[in-house]
Image 1 (cartoon, one colour):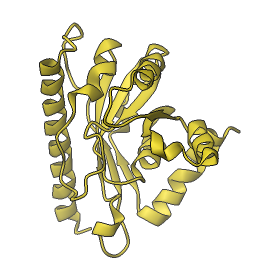
Image 2: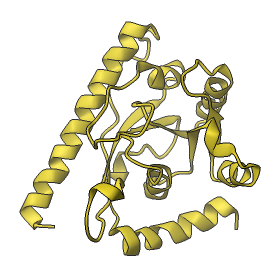
Image 3: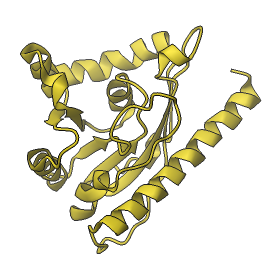
Image 4: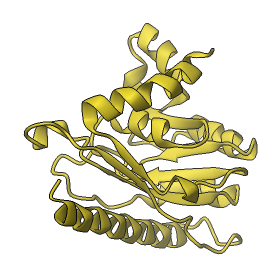
Length: 206
């Protein structure tokens, strides 16, 4: 069994025990074809939590600093991560992402670009959607709740909710205005998914 396969088997039960992890909307992840899962970003737990929740193998862009030391870089590469330089247009990372989608695989992106320090949803950088639009990939919004463990006292409760693929014109421009509009729509989707979870929390007193 590969390391990725091992993690796919062990992470779910580990997360269920440690994080009281729950997953909703897995049926919204297309079973084939190129897919971009676009998630909000709260902590370093987000990639493994989303990866374990997904129904298909996923690949991630991860900030280049995480690939040092080399042993850790080698480990996360085996788990589907590849480096991206933040604060710059990293053409190599974009080429890697496009290649993943061209091979009809699943790419996870965090449109906010960095972790939220307050728990509030940040502005979505339109650039996160360039690869999806260029490869005409399905964009699945994913709302992560509870991984910012320091902000929650007691036993954590983590949820991942996958929304329905976002509709967009497959021939849309990859100009900044179009991508920013797509980013704004993604943000609305995440807010809606988060509200659904909050409502459920109130109903179940959890």
